[in-house]
Amino acid sequence: MRIVICDDHHLLVQAMATALGGLGYTVEAAVSTPEDGIRAVALHDPDVLLVDVTFPTGSGLDAARAVLTNHPHTKVVMLTGGDSPETLRSALDLGVHGYIRKAQRIEEIAAALDKVASGQMVVDQQLLHGSRTMPAVPRQRTPIDELTPREQHVLQLLVDGCSTNEIVAHMNVTPSTVRTHVQSIFVKMGVHSRLQAVAMLSREGLLDRVGGIHGDGR
Image 1 (cartoon, rainbow, N blue to C red):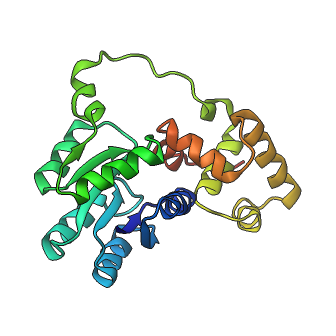
Image 2 (cartoon, rainbow, N blue to C red):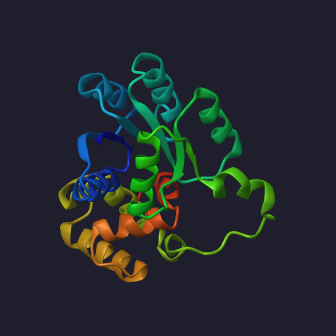
């Protein structure tokens, strides 16, 4: 199966591309904007476009609409870190072939891709029913809540794929300060690398929340 992956979390895209490649799938392109996703589909004519729902600019729904209209051979599977019933309905109204959670294990995502490729429609049942059947509960504390505002800012830059030097330039601090923040983040999150941090955030459904962190890093 030939796949194009489109998600603005660069490290997640890299990790997913590597994992799916290891399972025998051919990842034709891994891009980070809806516009690039549309262009990659036009260029590679993949079997499946795996696209995030939300982006800092643009929308995965717009990419899905364009691909479904102009490239009917390509099936569209949407990834989400949230549980908005409105967004789910909008995606289904467009005619997407799958709507699944980022927090799923890569084997579950691969199984969903296989079902879609065979002509089935796949919608995560938790997303389909959860918001209607589960009572509202207070939000539990997450590893992000244990970080200082400056560490949260560094984590956002890490998730965005920034190198140490890029973080230094962005925050106007020394390399040793960045390394100290990164080490503190890893300790508090219980991970040992950027990829492990991104994997944990994805598993906990926190990637989009990290993407929403804003601050000046002071």
